[in-house]
Each structure stands twice: as C-alpha cells, then as structure tokens.
Length: 270
DNA sequence: AATCTCGCCTGAAGGC
DNA sequence: TGCCTTCAGGCGAGAT
Image 1 (cartoon, helix red, strand yellow):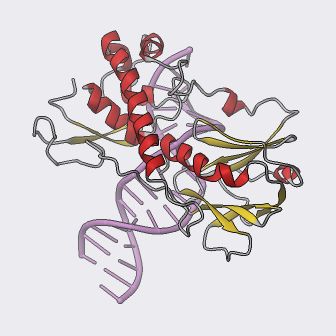
Image 2 (tube, rainbow, N blue to C red; image 1 turned 120 degrees about the vertical axis):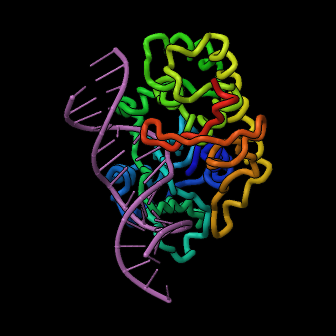
C-alpha cells in the first residue's frame, strides 16, 4: 500500500526514463480502474514528456497538451520495461515511448487510477480540493491546531483528512502519533497547541526520512517487480498489536478508527 | 458544516 | 490439499 514516500520514490525512479521522451502510444487493457480510464488519455500520444510531478499521492506525467494522472491506490505498481516485454496479470496500462521504453502500470486490486487533465480544462475538482503538501512550508503544526478547533473527530482521522494535509496514510498516521505521544482516539480539538506543533514536525520528519531511505534502497524500476516496496524502516506500533511497546513495555493496543486499523500504546500516548 | 458509512477490488492469511 | 471467510485499505460519494 503505497504511502506518500513510496509514490515519491516511484516518481524518482521513473522520471529519468520518461523526461524528454515522446509518447508513441498508450495501451489501455483494462479501463475499469477506480474510475474508467478516459479515452482522452490518448491525447498525449505524439507529445513529449516535460515533467513527472507528484501532488499528494497522484503522479502527473506532463505534456504540452495535458497530463496523464496516475494513482497507485492500494496495490498499484509502476515498472519500466521494454515494450516487447510480455504482459503479466493485472498489467492494465502501458505508456509506450518512441524509443521502445514503456511505463507499465500494474494494479491487482484496481483501487488505482489513470486520468487525464487537459491544459485547457480547469483542474479536476478532487485535485483542486487537496490540502497542502506535508513537506512544504504550507503545512505545519500551527495549521493543524488552527483547523482542529472545531473538530470532534479523532485526531488520527483528522491528520488523515486530505483537506488538512495530504499524504498522511494509515501507517504514518499511526507512527507519527506514537512518536508525538498523542492518543489517536482523542478528539482533534482536545489536542493541545504544543502537541500539534510537535506533531507537525514529526510528520515532516517521518515522511522525509522514509523518502530518504526509499531513495537509498531504491530498487531498479527496470526489474521485473518494479516495486520500491517497503523501506527498511522500523515501524514502532503499526501492525504490532499484542507486542510490547518499545518504550514502556506495555502491550500495543488496536482499535478501529474511521474504518482503519489503529495501533497505539495506552501508556505512552495520552 | 461536520461526520458517518459504503463500496470499489483481489490476494494473503487463517480456520476447518 | 482445498475451500470458505475475513481482512487489508485510499479515498470519493452519498447519507445523515
């Protein structure tokens, strides 16, 4: 399940193979992803890739006429192959370049997406509505504090809200709250300003570190699996229900918040 | 306006 | 071995 760091590492991995190359053809084998892949993606054919950008967990492959937007969802994987490479199960979309290189999108669960944004059209609504990037100065603990004053939802749900800040998925929400010592069940408006200021910094640190580690362990995207996978990163609470807390040795608890599995230490997180 | 719930998917894991 | 059930989860859409 790609979180923001995985998406950023994917961007870094595929960019050098795409930038400056021309798109020869886009092959859609299975258009029924999270949303139907629009026929307009073919408008990119014949155009040069200018940039590969990331916004939240969306990747944008920019051309002069518009952008192909990719989202990896839960199980999406990108790999760079030769266009002759035989397809495997769940290879849904190919972006074939004129030099024979191909960006291949594979997604077993099809929670991912492939969309089209024309340069002439207004920005797709759901993209326009996204909150700030966590690793920019547009996001900090002060913002968390300010926006949380009227929110009674659990703080974990709050920091996973895309309008508050993008790119904080379930794993990093759990980990960040553990490091910050905040009980994930606590109402967002009940969390102190001091705690939010710390949490803001922690979210930045956790995400930045994961990207850094992903960069160093980056798998070759031309390999068969094409998957940057999980970083050699130590998770302190996520998935550790029933195990001992590393700090205080008490048992890690789990509850469901916002229909997502939530892990925390009752001793360390208040 | 804020919050809650549902649903899209398939593969892995666990129970019998 | 193999079938069945459960769980995982990003995130928009629609209901409350």
